Amino acid sequence: MLNFFRFQIYIIALCLPLYLLRFKIFWIPSTALELMIYILFALWFFKRKDCFKKLIIKNRSFLTPALLLFISATFSTLLSRNLIISAGIWKAYFLDPLLFLIVLLDVAKSKTHIEKALFFLVLSGILVSIVSVFYLLEGNLTYDNRLKAFYLSPNYLAFYVSSCFILGLYFYSEFTGYRKFLMGISCGLLLIVIYFTKSYGAYLGIGASLLFLIKRHNKKLFCALLLVVFIIAFFLLNFSFKSIFSSHSFASRLMIWKSAFYIIKDHPIIGIGPGTFQKYYLDYQKFSPPYLDWAVPYPHNIFLAFFSQTGVFGFISFLWLIILFFKNTLLKNTPYFAYISGAMIYILSHGLVDTLYWKNDLCIMFWIILFCGIAKKEFKRKAQ
Image (cartoon, rainbow, N blue to C red; front, side, top):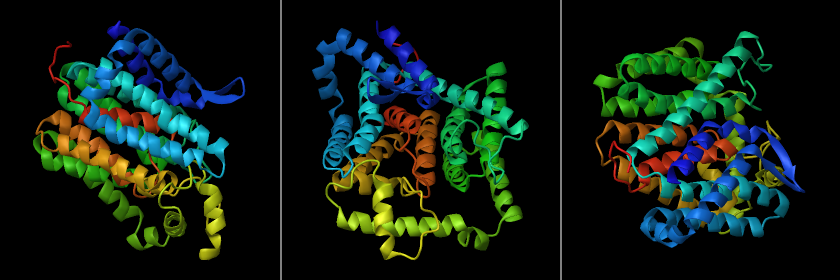
């Protein structure tokens, strides 16, 4: 039966973009991704409920901050100015990942299982990139010539495929023969898509991640070094630092971050509730010059997003999980943990200027990567 649940985990990892398929169950909005997670958890709980208590105790060092984050988000939701909006975000970004995580903790028994989940995640990014290339060839771009494919924003596309690119480099380093060749082609495809999203945050995150990886494994990452040189050359040839820091995008972010700090100052304990940043952002306009951007659902910073919307305890829980992650991964000098660390470094680096995690597919991806770095498993090649 565990093999069946593992297969469902792999399928969900492959199908994360299906959150774009939206519908209502009676009056409650939902997505195809959510429905897959609920079915998985219900079947798992029906078959494995006897091991639930043991699972919680065994993984308490991981689940304690995860549950604290969930509880913080729950209280913030219940006290939110707009309960309906916050409840929807709470369900998609906190409840769904927790249910998925519990099943993942139980059924991923070995490194083989974990690597398969990561591989299907990378495969999902590759499939998204293939579709995106067709949009690119057809000239189906945004008004400012950025590639967004079927996502609402070029940044959303960049968010998703960039983490897959870093993880894809891991499989490229591990594979041999034709599989190595195919993964190399796939990583190149991912890189092309990232380039045409013109997401500076993605360039920053990938650059930070690759610099970390180069430091850990110089010989195996010569190609990554070339990529870093390419990214630097791209900036030097096409932009000046002055133009970046004086751009509309950067100036707008400064205003957004300033408003976020005011919001946190006034709501430090419980936060304002998930999904309500837009309303508070508009209310706090009086503390700033006229905004450059008015439609701002999140504060363009992953840390400010957690602090403002889940309060100080949610923020501490998030930092706790990150510290646990790097405490485990940085002490292990293996390619697996190096690339997992690289993926998280990408998320946090890009998260300085954009709001990663706060999206249906990205929150599940975040917890998969977090699990792969923290979970206490017997890392053997053969499945147990």
